[in-house]
Image (tube, rainbow, N blue to C red; front, side, top):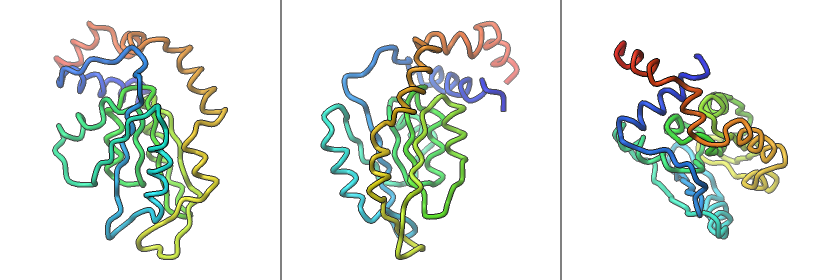
Length: 193
């Protein structure tokens, strides 16, 4: 995959749905928490994690049940979210349509280190936080986030430095648009499709 392809897909979706890119920092961050405590998977201490997030005054928390959605709903549900939090699973593919410079926090089962969503996040200009230090007493259902991994809900120095570097490279969203494609190249691609 060429580095511009995921960004090109975002732009096509934004154009199709008439979604303008934000160019200013929001007053509060929109945090989408995908609630997946069902018969197949879950986090035992979900309420503790949600309370930790709710105590922040700089965010607006949206808790979404894991339910079937149309493709349109999937895109419109994540496009203006700044942070997407979820247990590893297929519903995380929606991150493709998040605006650049958002973040993904992925909870992983014990001994599971698949890098799929990490790679997808990086290619779509999102920050990625993988939480791998979980434990369980029932591998078929749930896991618990350890105390050390709860600290990952706050950005580390490394992530802050990476955000700073991204902002230096792309001081505004308009630069992303010009770097992805010229208007003429975009027209040719659309005509080809």
